[in-house]
Image (cartoon, rainbow, N blue to C red; front, side, top):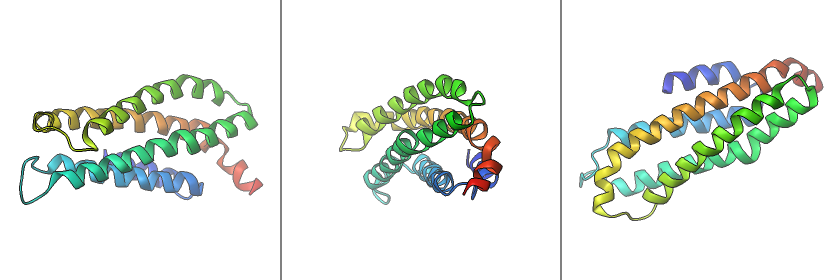
Length: 159
């Protein structure tokens, strides 16, 4: 997952500051996920609460930026160039909405103090949310590729 992020960052980093910042936030989210996945849930040496809270905060911020900034920017660009990208967005954005719902559910479960029984489910839930994030990143990369990358030279000329 982290390697894919580096590839996406190399491909699109710097093309547009907003996307570049968002991809950096994605990388931070992946690092937090990996650290959380590697931690021992009930270890006294490494308090889990702050790690889960930080992961949830970055995940929700990342999802929000996608929905309220990035997707809108990409869709507006697709509308401006009218080259079929809007149809792709109509196909992918509902899938991204569903994945966002799963991220929100994870956040609602783990961002606040949760019961001991819930912590026992954390490894399985982390695995599931990792799959959700990976699918989300793949769909977002498709949006970036199709709705922005194809126009990057034209956008750069206009700036």
